[in-house]
Image 1 (cartoon, rainbow, N blue to C red):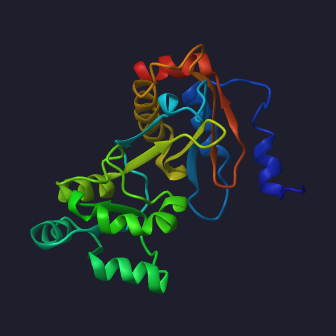
Image 2 (cartoon, helix red, strand yellow):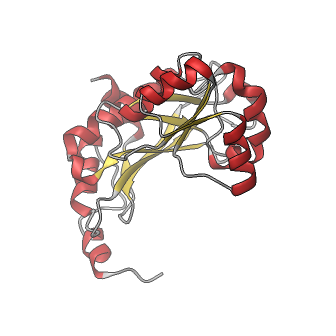
Length: 235
C-alpha cells in the first residue's frame, strides 16, 4: 500500500520496534496527526481474556475527564416525565413507538448514543438487529438503560464512552482529538485504562493487558509498553 508524503514524514518520527511510555506515545500521536481535519485519537488494548466465555467478558463505560471533542447526538426512548427530562437535559431525539417506527421504516440513524428508560426495553428490543451491530443497543452495564435518563444524557454529552471486547479480544476506544494535546489526552487515556483494569474478570489468568497502542485517524500506530500501562493509570 502506497502512503502519502505526510504519512511517510510522520513515520520517520516513530520507531516501530520500540515500546513507548504512554505520555511519549501520546505526544508522538499529536505530532504525527497532520491531516487537514482534527484527527480522532484512539486507544487499542489487547487483553489476555477469551471473549467467547461469558465469565471473561470486559464491558463498561467511563466518562472521559476532557470529553471526546465530538458533538454527541443523543437518542432517548422514553415517555411522559422521563421524556420531558431527557429533552430538558439536551437529548436531540426523544420518542417511543413513533421513534421505533421511524428507525424501522425510514432507516433513521442520525444519532451517536442511544439511551432507554427500563420500561421501554420491550419496545427497544425490536431494534436489536439494527442497533446491535452498530454498537448502539442500550445496555444496563453501559448505563444506557436507566430510570435516570437525564443523568445518562448529561454523561453522554460530557464525554461518556463505552468500551467492550471485540471478537479478537481487543478494545478500541476514542480518547479525544489530536488538538487536545498530550496532557488532556493522557488524562482521558488514564481514565479509560483505569476503568478497563477495574473491569478485569475474576476468571482472567496470566497477563491481563497484553498490548496497547494509540493512533490518530490517519496516523501511525504507536505501541505502549504493556508493563507500564498499569502504572500509568495509577499515577
